[in-house]
Image (cartoon, rainbow, N blue to C red):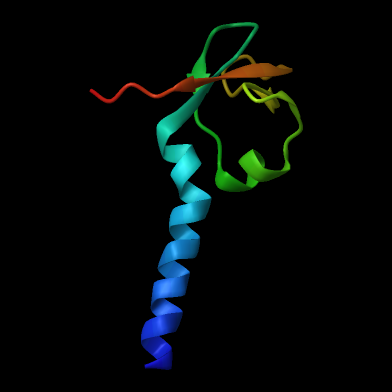
Length: 74
C-alpha cells in the first residue's frame, strides 16, 4: 500500500513541475523567436511581472525579458 501511495505522489509531483511548461511558450523581445524552457529554468529565472521572465533566447543568444504566450495546439 505504501508503494502505491509513493507512486501516486511521484506522479502528482511530475505533473506539477511540468504542467506550466506544457501550456506556455516564451517569445524573445529581440528576435520574436518562440521557444520553450525547462521546468528548472522556469522555477529559478527572475520575473518582472506575471508575463515577463528574464531568459536567454536560443535563437539570438541574447538575455532579455521574454513574454509568456499560450501555446497553440495544432
